[in-house]
Image (cartoon, rainbow, N blue to C red; front, side):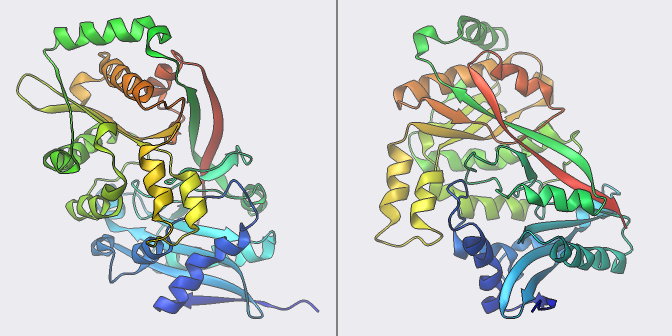
Length: 377
């Protein structure tokens, strides 16, 4: 007998854990799904621990069929986006569901109601609280493993949204790039890097310890804002968000993987944050880090043949002047030294063609595509 689906709004730590654990059950046999760290996910959605609630409101919902969870969703309003950028948008994220269109419809109805309550005009997702969070529904590359900072979902999610008359708002692409040895890497990248360094009197920064990076982190986030402020998804980065991401991700950073370029006045004008791939290690720890399994993360940090690009920033004054060639020339040397042969890019907006042109210098394949979906309410 079919049991009615009930939607429950949640606000306790016990329910937050149930919310976070649902995809662990949904994707437990899927080799492409990379689990998040459970405690970090709970801290992200808990208003008591995430400072984003200084400028945001959110509600979280679970869909139950009997006593079984069959879906989840978060409805969010980023007030900086609404008030400063004049985007009358309700966001949705943390969306996971069984292959049942009626459950998806009930969950989306909760987000629509939340948006109407605040007199907002349209809905978009899946996204997080800001553009620093995971975003984008996977629409191509379902047989590819996601990275530490990207989402994974089954193909039927898109079919559900299309059936409910949602349309695509933005698209992102991701690339897998093969790293050759330095001698056979693109000569024009090496040559161009040297020319640009001399022409603009630039200097590379080298970091030996994590603490050496700290004085530049705030500048990196400022530069990130300058780099992406004209893209459609941009929301100004707040100081408390910077501190939150320091606390969350700094422990994963290997200082060798941070590349920074300063001008003659020691002003940061470009940077790249890359990391060894933690996907396999996160699958092994399965959401829980303890003294026994943390060895998997340490191995991933120091002994790895795969890496990921996470963030790249170039000051607008230096964009389209070949600065990325400097960054990638240094990253190439690093990866050769570390015996890294494959690197994945972070999702890039499809219209961000400037950065995508750089991949043409290397053997690459576009292996994933994702999108956000929208609808007027």
